[in-house]
Image 1: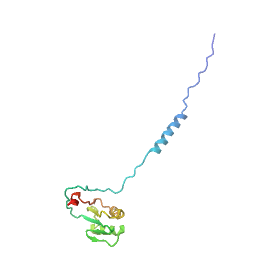
Image 2: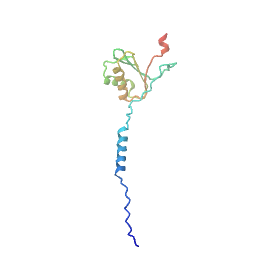
Image 3: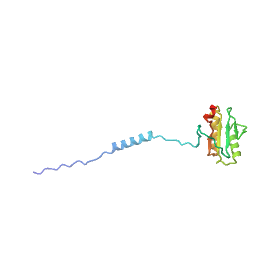
Image 4: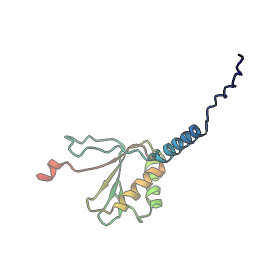
Length: 141
């Protein structure tokens, strides 16, 4: 007896569900990824509990008073705008932005006044910026 051979069905892999899963994973990772913004101004902040204060030659001292006025190396500035601070710093440094700059702000000075001083220094390109603090031991005496 001769039997007819049945044709075997062709084996197929349906890729549609696999592609759907890959797209869902891709969307999940795109949505859950967070991006960080890097800051543009690098500050070297001193510690407040230092033992000694070293004298730095050619230090430019920018003082922010309680009222929000500014002094550069003891000389008062006529205004409080960022452009006025920039002009004074540029004239005193003669364009040399590698000189160290210390911002000495009163504890009760407004935050905006200190930020304006830092903004002026950053726009000019000062890279050696520090913020002066009081030693906690000197406040006790």
